[in-house]
Length: 189
Length: 141
Image (tube, rainbow over all chains, first blue to last red; front, side, top):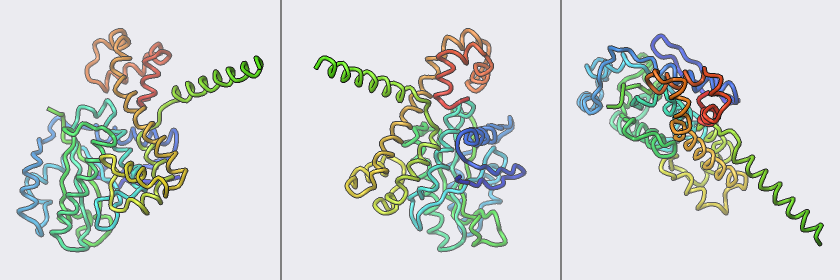
């Protein structure tokens, strides 16, 4: 049985075991439920502004930047998607996670929403390179979703933030800082 | 000779029936489909498709180009996975059309696709009919 770990998010801790049959259904539905909890007061996000802010403050972190702070208020979860070393190629063992996202995003409860994929790295390696690689990897995920799994491209946005927004700020090299955030950006206009 | 022909015809009928049953089989989720790909083609992908990504058919064309080298199990699985993904997509896009009548009958005042789906899933009559099967094939029950 394969296990895919979805790490804790804010107060919602999700530990999904993506197995066969009934267990699989529950995993899809947990994704759908978590991403579908949309607050009426959810802020609007301008992805171009996020890119602008991240680029302007590379090396200084993004957690306190105004537009990045808004992201914390949105429905989201954190996923582990493994890539080949220094490459945009998703490891076959992580195909399932991308498939699970596709299952969730095609569900009628989520079909009206658009999503942002945020790529994060640990601090191993050069900061600028990490920023670029994380953007390319986030883009590789949305590309797979929009082609292999036919999610409408106008529902998908991607951005890389490199090592600028660590989960574990005390240990920047920690592997859990390498992660993918999937965020519900609200209704498709 | 006549007998043999009859046996032959019988075999064809059985084969067609078997194929029809396969075509009618429940679809599988995208996650399950690509898990099969990872299991049966993972080592070939790492060996022959290094640096290539899942999107835009790149893994598919890489495996097809290396057909002589990849394992036979992978070649079979690749074709099945492509079919599975296509079937699931077809089922999901035909939901609205197939369930149109049932939506009008049982869930007329319900707003929003997600709410319409929960409404349909609660209606026993729907579950037994074509629309119910469409919901199962789409993976939404």
